[in-house]
Image (cartoon, rainbow, N blue to C red; front, top):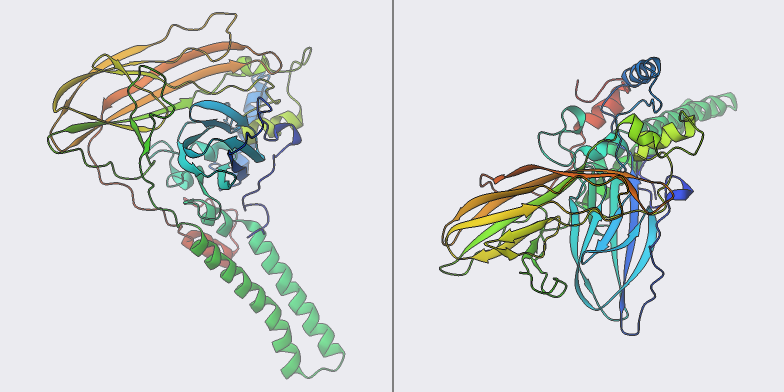
Length: 451
């Protein structure tokens, strides 16, 4: 049931070609359970005004850009689902994934790698999980100081139990939707029409006016009640317990614990220390020439439908052979870790440790030749009873072919490998609708929220 027109999460593909699908038709075996996953999307506030977007489009067309669009999104937002490191599905919509009983790591890769969660699967039972990502450039807003203005405090994505999501931008997106304001205006118009008809029919004014006012007051009360109900329903999750990865770690590797994206790390055992590696990747924007490699044969410029899709989801056409970004290769004092694009915690002895990182190889063939992997090493000092945080950020440049199982380009760059200053865990996100309520009351929808 939609809160407003257009901004509530939708668990269907924006276009049919991007429906959720599994790369293989694996069926549930006897005794297995099911992960009932819904991959959804919604809209949020724009980072630029319509005039700014049209000016950007006109400027690119004058420059002869073959992929001239109003936005700057050039990396795909299509969700890719991994379970215990295995690519299991991609696209939007509902999908059932058979899983063995036990605890599993579910990762959702999109424009970046910041969505993951541990799920418990029981034999013959279904575990329900929802993913929601904002379409368009809003999805870039996943880390502090990277996006400013209206999107500065928004995550751009969320993953959690059905109906219990930590989704800071979910409520502001709905509160700021002009759909709510349009419905309210229609109710006021209906109230005025009813009052006029009642008065023309000879109904006393003391009865006609309250009857008309009841319509728009009822609509306002229903909208406020829906907002409060949504606020109480969402923002209910808490940091989950660490996930032991030993059950699915490759042979010969050390298995770290995977922590909740926002929760605090556990306490090391007495006399021990710990290392917390926060590994993330983000996709680099493709150039217009690189995107043009995905155009149908003989087409030299994109049409209106392709432009809409590129601005919304970062792809001109559906990619038939979708790929997942492999995890980084991480060694701690020469011992390979079972890496993932998560927050990995591993207990160590106090003292100095050497961490070596190598970027992953391409998940598909690269006929033109992939860029050589990058390696980086750093020494980390750990103290007894403390956890030393280490940040790893990798930028991935991938140009997939839309029809063949190959990549035209693959390159990974280590943008950051450094110790992070200790900081308290982030508080549970809470939606702030003050700006949206102010704009709803004044009707000044043409203003940017950050002005």
